[in-house]
Length: 250
Image 1 (cartoon, rainbow, N blue to C red):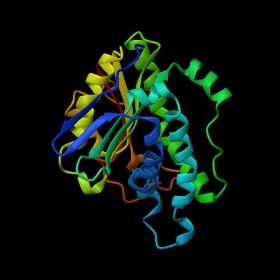
Image 2 (spheres, rainbow, N blue to C red):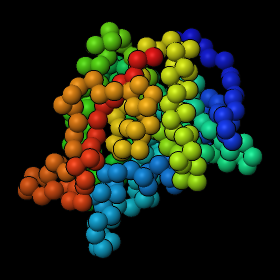
Image 3 (cartoon, rainbow, N blue to C red):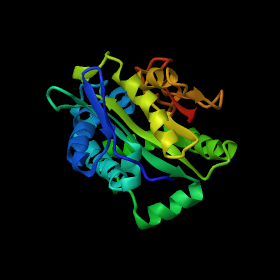
Image 4 (cartoon, rainbow, N blue to C red):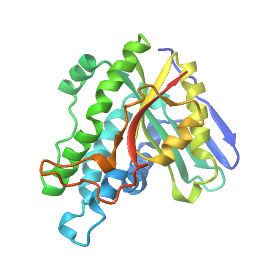
């Protein structure tokens, strides 16, 4: 892929540019305090009870997903593909769209052998959460591999995190980040971007910018997920809550 040029642009009351190494501490704070709290699987499976034993610890979630995010953002190529938005007047981080280079399953396995993901926390709650995520993403992993074959490419851009601070939502920022993402990826030589979307907020923003479901029956509905005993994993889930792989041609 071609080397990027640093760019910074104004949009409404925001300043948007590529992610830099100096941004990583702010990004980690945003992921831990905002993005992880918004995670639908955590909210639907673990915030529906008054029993504190069955509430997933944010500390555990952050201890696992924070390092995973930073491992990807430590790679300069991934940072160059990612965008960050600041409030132009205050300098506060308003939104992020983090991406990494998605390779074939075989190549991804080689990378994980040399740089493995953090160990999964041992609590029963997190073990349950990890098992739930495996169920949700089982179908998605196969679809991602199929997308690379359809586009006849060995790699694509994977939208890992899209998140907007609650103070800046409903201003079109997520939609604008997706729009700029497409242009950004075109400039870096990518022909496709994809993501596993887990909430309606991100799906609406992405579909406004030409993301679409390439596999008609590729959704996994939260309400349909059950454990080995037949118990619903997401008892309060709405039928419109689902996980889906969406792709965008750049």
